[in-house]
Length: 176
Image 1 (cartoon, helix red, strand yellow):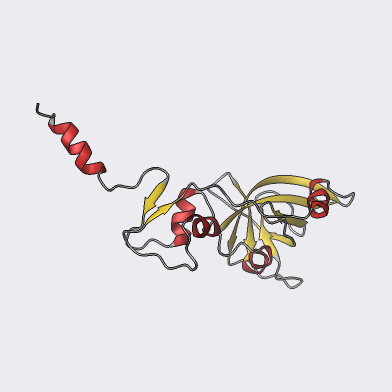
Image 2 (spheres, one colour; image 1 turned 135 degrees about the vertical axis):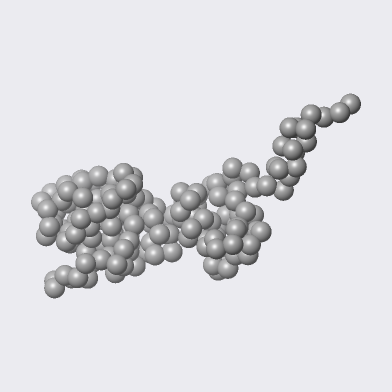
C-alpha cells in the first residue's frame, strides 16, 4: 500500500516539531520573548520547565501550558485586597507592562494610562502575588493591545516584582 505524497510530507514536517503546548527555542529567542508570545510569565516558564536561571539553548523544547503555580497569600491579605476601602474605587483589571517612564518631580513611581487624568494616584495590585504599588499617572498609553490597561515605570514594575515577567495581571484602584 502506497501512502499519498501529502500524507508522507505531513508526517515528515511534523516529526520532531513542538506541539501547541510547547515551543522549540529558535535563534534569537529569550525566555521573555517566548513567555510574551505564549501569554505566560517568565517565572511560570521557569517553573514548568525546571529552569533554575534564564539560560536556554536553541533546539530546546519548552512547555508553555503547565499549571500555573498558585501563590500562597495570607487570608488577611486576600480579604483586604478583595474589598476596596472608602478612599479607593475599583478602576478595572487587565495586564500591566513596563516602559522607560516619564520623569516626575514628585515620584519615580509613575505610569501611563489611556484615559485617567494626569496627577491621578492609582493603586496597582499584582493579581498573582498580591503585591501593590501606588503610582502617579503622568503619561498616556498603553496603545495597540486592549488587554493592557497600564504602562508602569521601571521603578513601579520592580516594586511589583514583575520585571522578570514583562507582562502581569493587575487590578487598578483609583484614589477618590
